[in-house]
Image (cartoon, rainbow, N blue to C red; front, side, top):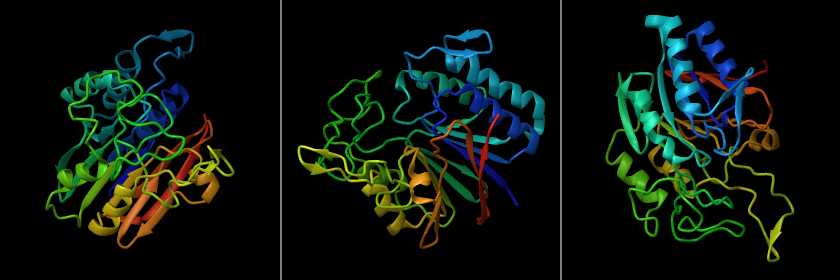
Length: 288
């Protein structure tokens, strides 16, 4: 059995990261997946004890994983990371530096083969109401849900390496997966699939210009991809309240096992599963 930890949406919370580091050191998982929205909001001051942390990546996250590696030695896990829609892309060089010193594999629209498994990372989400657009793309068309803003609007912290006018999640997933065998494919997404148990937002009764908002806010492209390609495992975050509303943090679609680690409490949510037998899984909600 090969144990995996999956976390997402830590949003720069020192307490959650300290729990994560503690649990990795204590239980020595083989794989750790970081599913985006990992950093604090750029204008929010972060403190660790009495110390202010001006540069979260270089002053806290990279040293934190270095410390875990120092304590675990050869038991240090394989770590895979993506960014999420609340993460500022201007911080991407620090993720690449962490990859360079072998703390993690950074997977932005890329893949990495590990044994029989191919691990894919995809950070983009469909249009949201929020104005940071570093990690937003149109989903399957240029349609934008009521209450959301166009990915070509808002602001970015870094220039995109694609044309925001024409890029879609659907096109990306086709290019990323190609003709690859999906029987041992593992996808680290930030967005959940549309109309699933994992994408339920707390939008009940809310309207924009007399139009009711869709309470399912995941990606149609990801939904179709899972249904058609049937990867082995998919991981998702983004919608913090979904598990509380639906009562579910996992879903089986054909042979595909999908997990969400998003959580709307102050605790850390860890999805623990066996990579070769994902039926063997549990969600751990851990307080300090």
